[in-house]
Image 1 (cartoon, rainbow, N blue to C red):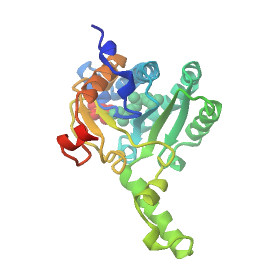
Image 2: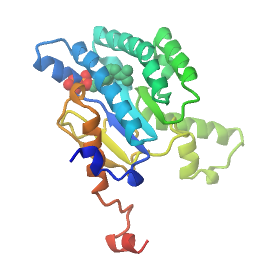
Image 3: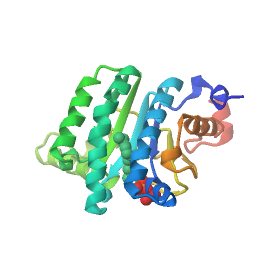
Length: 248
Ligand code: FPP
């Protein structure tokens, strides 16, 4: 049976977050430069986005560039930024054909002007699409995001707009870059590494974590379906006991 047919579409996670890892190693194994891996990662992005729409995932978030990635060799950083611009240019049609709305989180002011402009154009063009929201985490790190939220809250307290006692989990969540999207129920990381790497630390509090040895350039929609099937076989207890869940 096709893996896709084993998935219960009424029990899908609403939001899947992915750490696309292993591009560099995949390229090295083939005697190529790291950027060859990033270029081949684009096909994986396209197929995963199409697979997410096909199965009915409403929110997909991809870790495309971390705050720490700025410290990589200059040549790799500029190649990645160029790839991003070219991919956004080329793939806007794929997004439109699939009804995907493009979104971005992170310290976007740090992006090269051209990259920022293309990103904004594509976001505007796809703004009315409703099948799925694709969020690219760019120049993103969760500690940066949480620090920004704390700063904003502190300013609001200082100006008298809010009282410190009013700060609860909802208030904090509303000041994160993901304020418009639900928390991911499933986080996938490729390449065999089992870490969260400063990704959506607040939002992943109750997410199921799924790790696969596949390198990102080889990841395809069937791998996403495999992860979804595994997710559906897990019991999510949110701190309760199995017996309490049966009664609910
Ligand atoms: C991690 O692999 C991957 C990245 C830092 C970049 C991901 C970018 C793409 C897949 C290109 C296109 C993406 C979009 C959204 C247009 P790594 O370099 O850390 O691999 P390694 O761990 O093997 O070194």
